[in-house]
Amino acid sequence: METTATILHADLDAFYASVEQLLDPSLRGKPIAVGGGVVLAASYEARAFGVRGGMPGRKARELCPQLIFVGGNFSHYQRLGDAAIKVLDDFTPVVERISIDEAFADVAGCTHLFGSPQEIATTIRRRVRAELGLPISIGVARTKHLAKIASQVAKPDGLVVVDPG
Image (cartoon, rainbow, N blue to C red):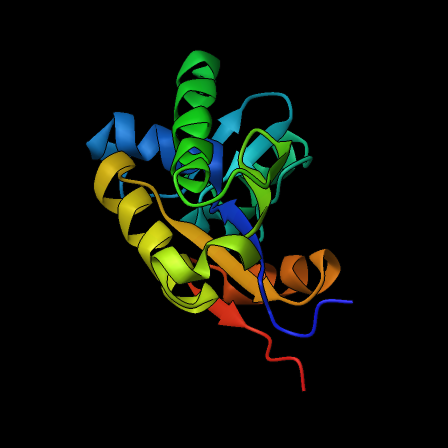
């Protein structure tokens, strides 16, 4: 069993909503929801009012009357999700994509090239922000399960390392 934290879980934050805010700068800083009848994704500004993915649009509007609904730009989501995964691929061939906006990466075999797992995660976060304009949270741990929990704790747009010990 691996005794050092070399597993990264990278998760783009509020992905669909973040992409919409990237594509339309007038939406930045505003509560938005992707969807209509059902909320597919909510920005952090909308989440502050209790709006969540999977919620009926009507309920979301009750919680946040100023909520802006936008339709989905799925081709952009796919393109930007692919580009974020490509950043991970630049550091290790051991990448397991688990959804459009998240993946695990094992960096055990590349620390001699790119630095510690924390340094690699920091560089990945910087590159995704600079190249794609999107926030990403990364958890680093000894196991996938712990790395995923760490990335959730890191949200929004942060990094958490779980030291084995």
